[in-house]
Length: 129
Image 1: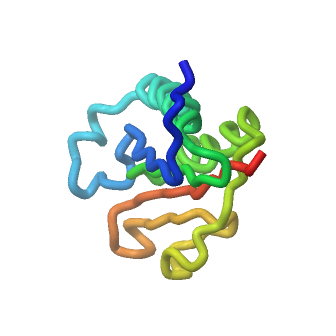
Image 2 (image 1 turned 60 degrees about the vertical axis):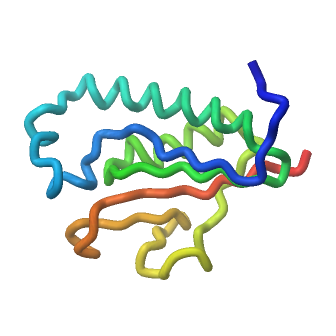
């Protein structure tokens, strides 16, 4: 059921594989299976769909994970926009340092490149109509 309450900004910090924080969670290396990722991807899609219902026209949906896996990050954004053409990815330029901005305008930190936990974020803007 669609909510009648709408917000200017919605943050979805989605459950994920945690592949960006393996240095802190070594147990994930041994406890994750391929089936886990498939389930997470389905859950991430469901949560994105639900979160989108809360964004008012002209509002922003931020999708974030602590993963460095394209399947959980860029691919989720791509499939979301295909399902919801009223949303457009908008770059994070001006919000984060340039070294963390991908070619597609998303935020991405890398344990190897930045000596930080791996993370991802996309800024998705809902059209006014």
